[in-house]
Image (cartoon, rainbow, N blue to C red; front, top):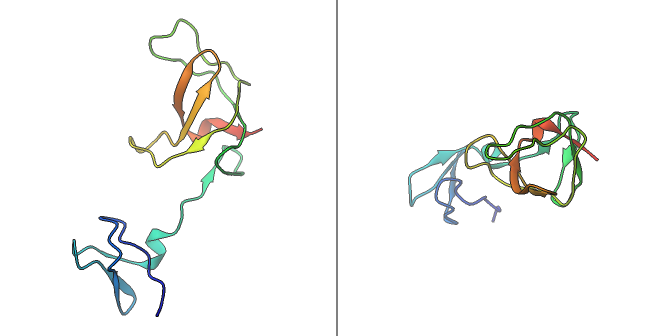
Length: 111
């Protein structure tokens, strides 16, 4: 029996194949197998990022409510890649002097 992915809509394991289309019987979601491929996160230079990497900020970032900004060249250790809730910020990290932050992969480079 082939190993089919869970439904990306409701995470159901009861997905079945109808030709080249995969169908979820619980939520009636139809999708292609290529649609659920694991997302690859890349930095501004095109390098692949993984959880635990160290990255460097490549531009000054203004922070709402803070008296200073995050300076270009700030090193951020032990990043965590997440599915963006707002559709944009996909790095969860702690920045020294600022605390927990969400960053975009487009404003960092692998360090």
